[in-house]
Amino acid sequence: MAEAPELVSFEGADAAAVEALLRAFLVLAKALPEEADAALPLEWCGCADERTAALSRLLEPLAGHLVWRATGRRSKSGSEGREQGWATRLLRLADPDDRPSDEDVEAVTAEVEELSAALAGELGVPAPATISVSKGQRASDVAGELVRERGLEAGLDLFLVRHPDGAPGVAWTPIAAHRALVWSMGRLFDRIESMLHGDWILGAERHAATWYFSRWSGTKGGAAAFARDVREQEFALVDRPLVTCGATALELFIEDERFDDVPELQRQLADMLGRSVLGVFTVRDRRGENVVFEGGGSHRTYQVLEHSPEIDYDVGYVGLGRLIPYDGRYLRSPGMALLGMHDPGFADDLAASMIEAVADAPPPVLIEGVVAALAEGEKVPRSLPPAPSRSAAGDMFRDFTAALDELGLGTELTDENVPDDLADGDMAGYRQYRLDQTLVEWLSALGKQSRRPKRHPRRKRKRPRKRRRSRKRS
Image (tube, rainbow, N blue to C red):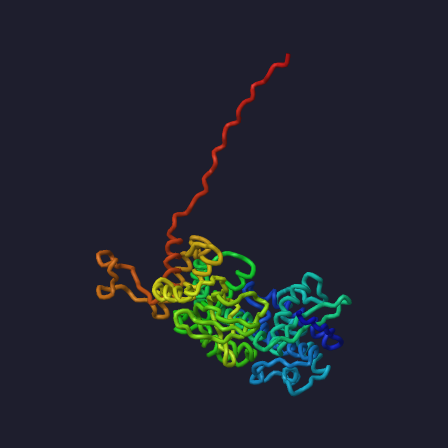
C-alpha cells in the first residue's frame, strides 16, 4: 500500500518566496523561446542572456531552501555558485550547515522580485503582481519541476500544492535512493538537451537523430510512448557520437565546466550512464525488487534492483534496452521494453541477428525496430519527411553541409577518391563528407525532399447546374 503523502503549508517569508518563484517563472516564460525550459539553470541554454541567467541562478537555491523548510531535509547539490561570488545570504540558503533567517530569505526574495520586474520591463510586459488560477497553474507546473528536482536530491517525491485556503505548500513522501536516482534521469536529459540546442549545429544533429530513430519507432501512446521517448534520448544523448565534435552529448556534458553545478544525483547518474550496458536480456528470476537478468548471447547474469516493483513482469520475459550500474548491481532503465515472449532461445537468436544486421543500423535503433514490430505491430522503417516543407529541407541541407565544410568534414571529389557509382560521370560540384549512418540518411532525405516537384492543388471543376423542368399544375 502506498504511503500517504505528508502535506506542509508555507507561511511568512517562505510563502512570499513561493509566490516570488511563481512570478519569476511567468516572466521567464515570456523571455524564452518555446523549446527552452525555464525550470533549468539557463546558463545551459544558449538563448539565455545575462539577466535571465542571473534570475535562474537565484531560483535553484531558493527552491532547495523551500524543500528544507518543508521537510527538514537538505538537497545534495553541486557548488551552487560558490565560485561565482554571489551574496552571502544566497550562499547561506544553499549551505547544509547553516540555517538562514527570515531576513536572509526575504533579502533573496526581494532580489528575485527586482530581477523579475526589470526583465518584465525590458520585455514590455507588466510584472505580475497577482497570479490568476490559469497562470498560477502554468507557473506551478514549471516551478514544481525545479522544486521536485531538489526534493529528489533529498530522497523525496515532492510536489508544489495549493491548499484550499490558497496557501502554498508541498506534498511529499520519502522514496528509496535508487528510485530517486532513476527519476532524476528526465532532468539530466533536459539539461543535456538545453546544452545541445544552445549550439546550432549540435541542435541540427540532435534533430537528425530524432528523425532517424523515429523511422524505426512505433506510434502507440501511453506508457509505451514514455518508454520510447526515453530510448530515443538514450540513443541521441548517450550512445551516438556527434559527428561534428567527435564525442557523445553525455561526454560533452560531463566535460563542461558547468558540470560541477549540476545536482549530485544527476552527476552520479551521468557517470553511470557512461558505463551502462545495452542489449537483449531474459528475466531468469524475480523476487520483488530483486531481479536476475541474463544477457542474450553472452549469458552473463546481472543482479538488478527494480526501481518500479509495481510493474508486472516475471521469469521468461525479455527486456530490450539498458541496464545502469549501481552500487554493485544494476538498475533497469525506464526506457527498457519488457515483452512476455517466454521463448528460452529468443534473446540469443535476437542478439545474434543484431550482430549480423549492425551494418544496417546501430544496435539501439535495431532494438527499437524489434520493439515496434513485436510490441506495436508496426512495419519499420517508416517513411517520414525530415523537414516540414520542401523549402525548409533545402535550407537545412545547404546550411548543414556549409557548416560541415567549415569544420573541415567535407572534401572535393577527385580522381583518387571518386566513388564507383560516379566514376563515369561528371564530378563537378560533388563533395564527400565523413558522416555516420544517421546523418547520411538524414541528408539524403533532405536532398530528396528539396528536389521533390512542388504540388499544385487541383482545382475542382464546377458542374453546371441542372435546370429543373417546371411542372404545370392541373
